[in-house]
Length: 136
Image (cartoon, rainbow, N blue to C red; front, side):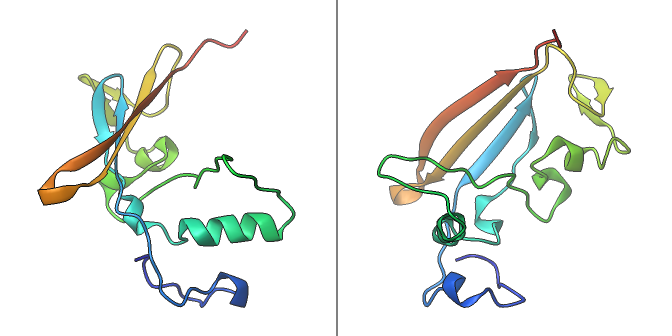
């Protein structure tokens, strides 16, 4: 389930049976894991996000994808955005032996996700990788 929602959401966002997804995310910066934000800490459930999006005029059709935005947990190693991870550049992260505060040209970020499977196994969702390219 999602964490307790306080203040209580507007009526159209209230859920009789609150639920959430127990996804484990892993963020790697140039091949080094720097964060493991837990999706189960998300304040809004996917159903609430979709309801909020569509009540404000966005259309949705079968097969459409939408994203939750940044996933962050309460602990330092669960910060999902690099601006949070480095606390606005004030707390460097050591990446491959080098203190870093922000992404630079050539850096690579990889996000992987898994979910609980039968008998304690994990179901993988694969990974997505992006490389920072120099400005033109």
